[in-house]
Length: 209
Ligand code: URA
Figure 1: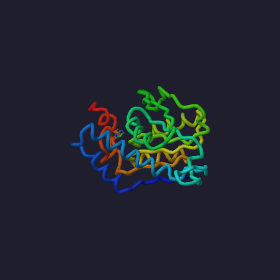
Figure 2 (figure 1 turned 90 degrees about the vertical axis):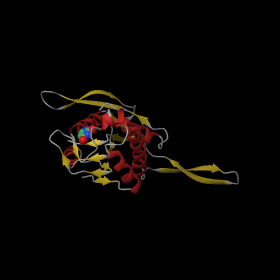
Figure 3 (figure 1 turned 120 degrees about the horizontal axis):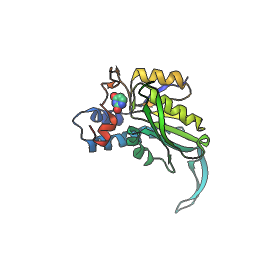
Figure 4 (figure 1 turned 60 degrees about the horizontal axis):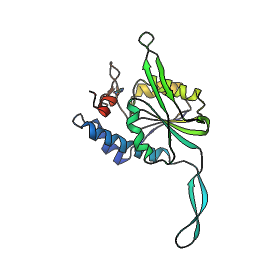
């Protein structure tokens, strides 16, 4: 059973507090989310494999290290996950980006994939699935299911804020996928909002509230 990792770096926690603040503008919200996503990606990619390569400095020949392991892909869950991509992209060379969109069926309440475009060779990649809010866990779990069906074997899930209910549901289904989050909040509201949370992440990123 994989763990839940809370990334409690002081800079992340500081920025998260401003992200939560209802007075924070759309522009600042988006910038802070990108910054936090970059910092979280830095922590999450700590264990990437390296290989040694020769390099010639202006003074002499030496040996350096470059990324040598599996190629990476990030897959934002539409639409709020989009707000995390640029921060991650600015950090990771040669990052491939997939997209997955989910909606909830009115009758069954099951999450359904309505759009999915992934890079090729998903079985060869380390995949980071991102959504700022891990709320009920239903759409996150369904998205990861679908991504596994496309061949992905090594997946990490990254959220900004998670609800205990969402963590429990996600871990029940995906014991092999670690969750990384900056905070585990109190609970879900009856309407499915994370409390205290930050409101609707998509609305706050895109200014649609
Ligand atoms: N999605 C959001 O954007 N916010 C929540 O609080 C829960 C789900």
